[in-house]
Image (tube, rainbow, N blue to C red; front, side, top):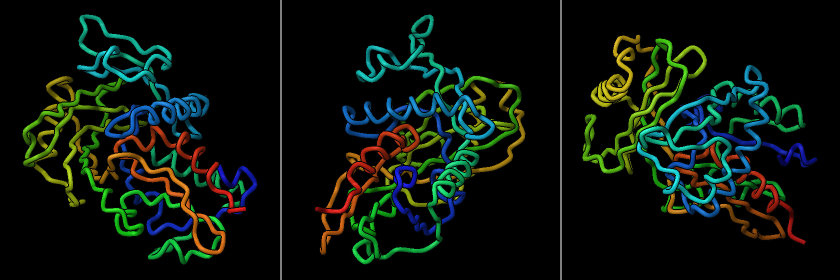
Amino acid sequence: MLAEGGRRVRVWTREPAERTTSAVAGALWWPYRIEPEPLVGAWALESLGVYEELAARPEETGVRLVEGVHLGARLGELGSWAARVPGLRDADAGEGVWAQLPLIDMRAHLAWLRMRLLKAGGTVTERTVTDLAEVPAAVVVNCTGLGARSLVPDPAVRPVRGQLVVVENPGITTWLTSVDDASDGAGGAEGTDTSTYFFPQPGVLILGGTAQEDAWSLEPDPSIAAGIVARCASVRPEIAGARVLEHRVGLRPARDAVRVERQPLPNGRVLVHNYGHGGAGVTVAWGCARQAAGLAHPAA
């Protein structure tokens, strides 16, 4: 957004996009594990409008509008933002909420975003930053996710570990989620909130998932993976025989509240924070980006 607004933008990143948490995400648009709700609703709706436009070019952008159901959800229990989501409706027999929502193939989408940035004159450099105040720029925008814990430093940022299993798609065309926040560790890891979800992405089906608070391991746990497959197969039996293609682990950058904030630096320089998006980074990405971009102007 900054580059397309005419600013000279240099992105410094420790990891290439394909090795970030974003690349691992199942990436269904939905406010999940993110606060504060009043701001999140506005950011999410702003992002939804962008994704609906991008879904007209799915092969290019990686964004598609896909039908599915949130089992256990109720329209009346959702935030005020839900009334502005087109087609959101209670399912028959009250088993959940149906919707056609953006589902994003993140590896394709990240590549498209990079090309869009480069076309706007931006650059991307793999470089580790150890001190935000020493970055030689009039405006520094901190979008480091979990890295903000040590870089800011901000101990309020903590990991919520998610594990996924990628399988050959046996013909499933709709997504499904069923979250059990009261889980007592089922699925092979003590203290793990388990959920059941599957997302049909191009050529594959992504199965999930877990939410392990303060867990840092990026190694897939075979027992957790087996639990994920079993839970998904209990809903759609054909998943049980699907060939496993890949295991993925990502660390959601959780925080009690997303931080989008302007902080003055010496000599009239500006630091803008945009991190702590938990499990809904994709959901609020464009809304947060627009707010952060609005804060990114040098001090008068």
